[in-house]
Image 1 (cartoon, rainbow, N blue to C red):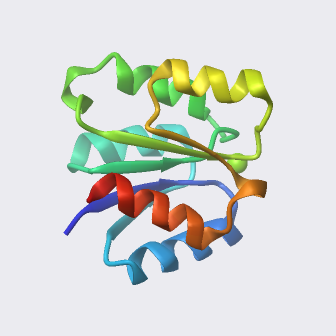
Image 2: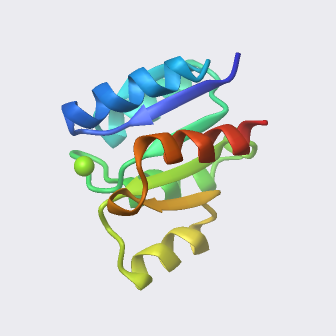
Amino acid sequence: MKTVLLVEDDPFLVEIYNTKLKEAGFSVEIATDGEEALKKLNDAIFDLVLLDIVLPVIDGWEFIQKIKTDDRFKSLKIVVLSNLGRKEEIERGVKLGVAKYLVKAHHTPSEVINEVRELLE
Ligand SMILES: [Mg+2]
């Protein structure tokens, strides 16, 4: 079973994506800020992180930078799911090496799950 770390501080979105990911057959762990997410990555192996950017404590940008400079997480895929949809923001994510950068307003939860599924096939 593939495991997904859902990093999101909006409880409503946590509920939606936790449910949808589980329905799609993934094992799911939740972190509501970047620091908690880093801790979870140290404690278990994940296949993919579904990552919000605007987060308390450590934001998504800092989180990605830490992951991308750590060899232990070489094969970990990061999918950004953010409200930040400006061209510069998307380009920043791509430059940092995320597998996908999805803008919340442009994708339904089902579409997001399909993107995750494709990456983990
Ligand atoms: Mg947020």
